Image (cartoon, rainbow, N blue to C red; front, side, top):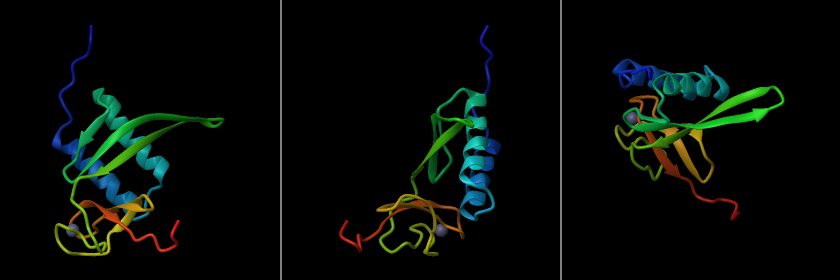
Length: 124
Ligand SMILES: [Zn+2]
């Protein structure tokens, strides 16, 4: 018989937000961030979770000779910035999380996650 679990609670979303802050601050690496986020998602049997201004998605495992590593996608939902400043509070520039031409950035002041299209300086 299937085990019924309640949907992720606010504490789970808060835990993931805290992990993302630690990731943006450089306190934990990508592998540790992904491992802990995937542990929450897989505990509930879900593939993605909205955590306010961002969404995390379990993209499955990347298999290497050293074993499987989970991959987590982060989607910014906090709006778009033209200059790197947070669309929600104006603080900036945001801290890099992902991307090159369109950066997913984290606001150290309010925790908003936003996208930041950057100019292509090198014409590539
Ligand atoms: Zn902000």
